[in-house]
Structure formats: C-alpha cells, structure tokens
Length: 381
Picture 1 (spheres, helix red, strand yellow):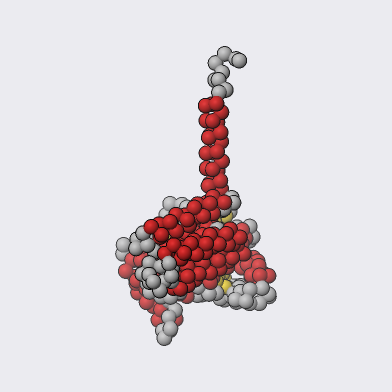
Picture 2: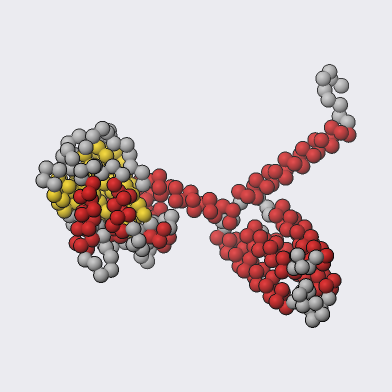
C-alpha cells in the first residue's frame, strides 16, 4: 500500500457509500424541483405520510380526523405525475378502509369515524388534483417551473422595454401599467440607438386585447420588433412589422404602433404611425401643446398598408409625449377630453421638470382604468 493512503476498511467503504447515497439524493431533489427529474422522491415521501396519518387517526381521531388524508392527496396533485398520483390515491383509499375497520361504523361513532362525507371530501380533492396533474402533464410545464417561467417572461418584457442611455441634455422615460394590476400587458416599447448612437428609435405598440390575453402576443411581437428595429431603414420598419403580424394569422391579430426617429444632435424627429394616437409636443417658447398626428392603417389589417410620418423639432425645454389609448380613452368620454385631461396634468410638471413624471401622470389620469396604459416622455433639457 502506498505511503499516506487511507486504509480501505469497512468504515471507509461505509462512508463512501453514505456519501454517494447523499449526493445522489441531493441531485435527485435538485433535478426534481427544477422540473427535470423523476418524482419518486415526492411519491415515496407522500406514501410514507399516508400510513402515519392513518395511525394518528386510529390513536387520536379528535386531533387527527380521517379528513386529514386530504393533505397528502392535495400535495400529490401539485407534485406528482398522473401515474404516480394514482398510486398515492390507492394508498389513501387503503388508509380510509383501514381507519373505518379500526374506528368502527360511523353510526356508532359519528364524531370520529370515517363518514360518507369524509369519503366525498377526500375523493373530491383527489379528483381536482388529478385534473391539475393531467393539465400540467399536457402543457409540459411542472408547477415548480410554471411560476418561474412566468416571472422570466415578465422580466424579458421589462428588459426589452428599457430605453437606451441618452447623451447629456436629453431625458427619456417610460411607464407601463397593465390592466387589473396584472404583470402582463398588451402595451410595450422597444428602443435602440442607431447611426453610431446619433439616432434614437423608439416604437410604442398597443396590441389588441389587454392584460394576460394580450401579454403572450405582446411578448412575441416585442421580440420580433426588437429584432427589426435598427436592422431596417426607419421608413421600412412599420411595413416589415405589418407583414410579420399578417403572417401570424391571429384571430385578434391587429395592433397600433408609433415609431419615433429622433436625431439627438439636431433635435429633429419624425413620427410614423400605424393607427396610433397622435403625439403631443410641448413648445417651451410658447408654453403650448401641439398635436403631432400622422396617418397609417393599423398593423395586421391590410397587406398594402402605407405609413406616413409627420416631422418636428425638439428644442431646449421641449417635451414630446407618446401614449396608448388606455391612458385617455374611457366609456362615456370623448377621446379629445381624455387628451385634454392628460395635458392638464402634464402642465403641472412644466415648472419642475418631467423627470419621474411618467408614472405619476398615469396615476393621476388613469389610475383605476381597466385597460393597459403606457406613456413615453422624451424631453430636451
């Protein structure tokens, strides 16, 4: 035996075996909660829980009633695959039969025996758990990964909606508030700087629908629009976006969009619209707001749609606001009235500046509106 080598005795072999078993168990648990491993660990744990509950019920039915079996049944519906879940249900049914034999018929001991109501409750919970497991199996996303996946999708939309850093003398901010306090919205923004950073391109889009219904389509479109933006000349972007939307063949496959192309050196800009609401520009010299409207059909409606732009210039102190209809539209109220209300609230920020104003404007104008709301503010200091 080489000098310094540890003796290969029974204790050493036992420690190595214990270490391998612990490592295998830990890896299985990690894989399982990532959604990649088998569910044998959870099944074994729940199968051990069932006889323990049955024993506790037979010893102290007042503290552990027969309906306690709903807990492993419910947890199994969230953790197990349908085939494994049936094994757990068989164990739970056997436990109920055993408890009924030990505690006696419910006519003699109605407070502590297995009653028909107990069987109905456990059976109903088991049926609901089986439906959940089958749906989860059909979708192919374990519940342990479902919440993480939704969180990741929400973060991807948020990251794609971030505006690029602007040079000194410029400020831009965007606020988004989904309908009903949800995490997903049919409104989104994609932005980039092109021509060596001189040109800022921003696209604000309002997908048909709202909230969760429009969130999946908004995620798909934001990724596609982000790839198109900056890769095509500005006047070809909306045409390409319209063609992409038409190819999806969605039942509710239209969207409005406005494309801002801003020269960060001169302040000259062009707005190209696809059925979107007009922008509003504040002129610091006159203190008045001017409507900046351009023509164009909504995206996803007509293959030969044309999109025309309107031009303007942002001078020192000027502000440009772009927004979606959820911010200014409301039942029983004219669109012009909603825009006037937004402008009235925006006038409060003229003296103090518009930094941090986007979110506060949404709160002031459309706090409790059941629609997606988005506001983009670009100002020149």
